[in-house]
Length: 184
Image (cartoon, rainbow, N blue to C red; front, side, top):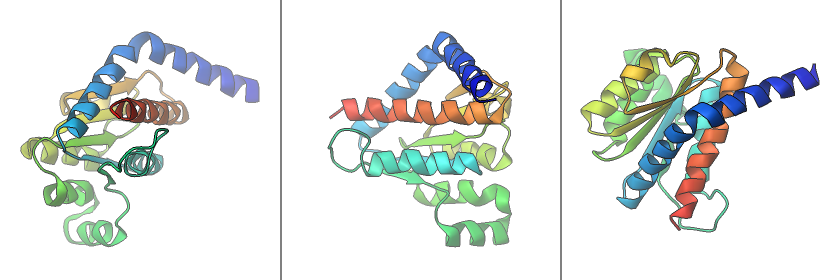
């Protein structure tokens, strides 16, 4: 089982190298442009993707590898009072879009993470981000889902397996953070 899992991961990473290097480079340009312009990065996802959002935000506000100033990376998944109040008053599908309405400014970057590309809360957040003139970057898998038509760039991991998609999402997140580190 162990070898099989490692080989499956290896196959997906090879597909990412072959098919997505250009998209990941574009994502790096998006995030570095936002940071250079003094804007912030807001990130959201559900479940494991929520953990990835928090991880990426922490790499920005803390540090990734290089010592540098703290950068505005905000995970919209961490404020339990906001999440529960918004879910109670408006429904769970609005917990991220309402926070974006409160926190996002034109020129910010919203990163939405959904392995299926069809999470309604993330789709609603993309709509809100667009209305606020934010740049939008998706991290998805499978066929990209509805996210493909809703964000400036959707990096679609070529796999049907949630675990493999999530593994690539955090790798891509680390590459985005490495690009930010290179600014300094």
